[in-house]
Amino acid sequence: MLGLSSQAEAVYAAMLADPGAELEKVISAAGLDERSVRAGLDELAEFAFVRPSRDMPGTFRVVSPEVALDAMVRRQEAELARQAQELAANKVAAAAAVAEYGRSASAATQAGGERLIGLDAVAAKLELLAKEAREECLSVMPGGAQSAASLNASRPLDAAALERGVDVQTLYQESVRNDAATFAYAQWLTSQGGQVCTAPLLPPRMAIVDRHTVLVPIDPADTKAGALCTSEPAIVASLIAVYRQAWATAVPLGADRTPGTDGLSRVEHDLLLLLAQGLTDDAAAKRLGLGLRTVSRQMTGLMERLGATSRFEAGLKAAQRGWL
Image (cartoon, rainbow, N blue to C red; front, side, top):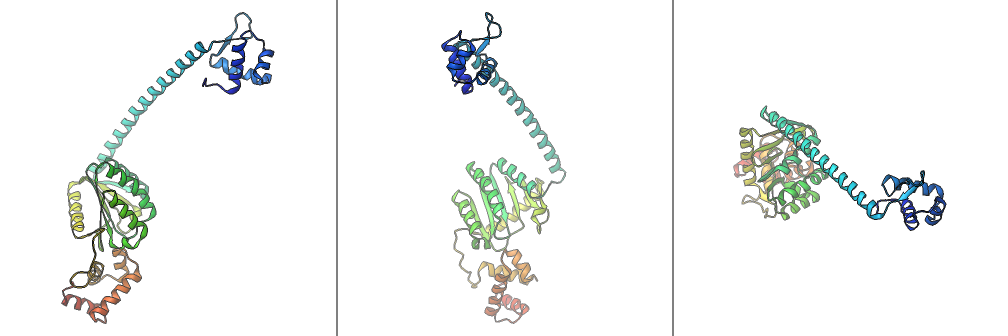
């Protein structure tokens, strides 16, 4: 309670009980050895619980608890006032640093966009944008199953944005329904008030915040390389249009995904489109976020249904049936 060590308290109690006691008597009353008592006296003197005696030079007189505690409280109040001044100064310095950073970032954006090199830089920018978002956060997450690191980083950002009433919309690849971790995250997002849709084919990865700022990969084939962040109106408007078109044709997470009137599932239909464009099975698998074996198996099934013996014949017959 006094802010003293146990040995200093014992010495103080002994001196209060017998203010004029000599050192030997204090040692006996405190139940300590001489070294501990002297250490206790040094501590008591430091915090003004004892003061040098004027009657007996070289010894101490005990200070009453009322006076000692009052002095201690005043010292603590002075220390708190000093800390408050230091905190206020730190806030001013932090505000100045943030303002300077904002000016630098604004200048970089006006110069054509801010290049974020590496995943750490992208993550830091996303954290800042998510914190500043006030209306909506739109994102496209191609590639099928998302990494655990990506999901773990997204959860607190999405939760904080949704709590503030921000509209969170995410487009996933259809194949995420086959990945337990990503599908569970998508279900969690919808349960918190977010919106999730899936589609076999998606535009490149992007994030759009408040219809004002977008993040897109520097290299869509290597998202680890970094991203470009820009608020250039023409670029933002174009990417919003791309996003809206993809969202309009996507399927909500809980919706029925029954095949169309032609008997094709959405994945099968988009697979035919990709192969008609000349993509190999491997390239189509990457675009659809599926495994190569899955795409090869589906393509074999399509060729059997079409009665085709070659890719060219399959494309021709699919076109004749109105599938393309």
